[in-house]
View 1: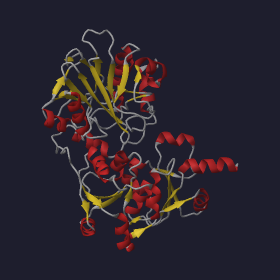
View 2: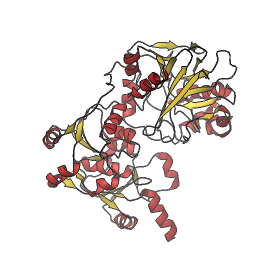
View 3: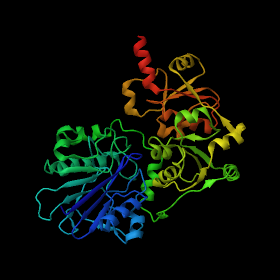
View 4: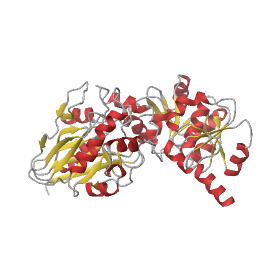
Length: 461
């Protein structure tokens, strides 16, 4: 077959990008690239392909796209939908426009709604095929969901206006495609770009017609209501990334790396106001960490969570599991947080030499949590997303989603004890460490999260 088609999937951001090429001519296009672009270049080189174009389906809010990096390396044009306005030269792609890579042909379909400039890209194995091989739907159509129309990425356009556009894009345009067309979205399960995303990374139009709640026949009003309801709180960095993706910005070097820091360098960085990002497992963090450090473990949705609890201009010192340090710095760079100054070369030795700065984190069993709830002065904080509250919660808890905690911590009293919980205990370690770093004196979280608490009380009754 002449068609070369590769999906690249980043678990950390639930983000998918694509390399599409005609193997006969060697012409290739990358769609929705991430910022560390070496893998696309290596794969193209290995297959004898030449990357001639980069297409972004829209201005992404949850990661910094690698269009400038790829263009610098290859000279490729950068394509966006016609409604896109950017600070760098853009090839504006019109609805119905065809891009020939040889026999393999791409066709642009405007599918606004997640954002005003959103497009989808149909991929045809041969120019005259009736049915497309697949459609790259960006953040318009996901597997099991559709793109949320309420992300403030599109300043000046309301969720309802976008919802009306999305209705047309999903119900008329994408559902107008044949059932056999494969669906390749820009995001999968766990992304804050939607609420019901599947763990699958590809599907078909027919499967979505049958099983996706937003693809069922319904009125425009019903559609707008159902797709805007119960969306997760948007991480603070989304607006920053959506803006950055429209700008001429610093281009990341292919071999960018951060240095190992000596103890003296760590102390100097901290004295100058740097914050510590501790990327170790929640249990290791709880048993010993530097006072004031924020725990966002590398074993989960690290980049997106970092974007909730750090700010882009903060200088960051990393403590990470051995061998993971560069990966952690890369994940910061993927969301445009470019101020990781380096990592602590030997955390254990540093902890031993700075025992006065090392502390433990309070993590409560369900029984200990119940004892704490009984006290008058304890503030209980539920940091789950709105959609998760349907399964129940601890009576009297204050609900502040993790994505809003940095901004809303002023609603809590730093002098009173806090007990925070999430669904399973990963996000609550982030939340508790964030509050401690903001000067809260007594913060605990619940081991195993609400899931453990609920199970214990279900068996007890």
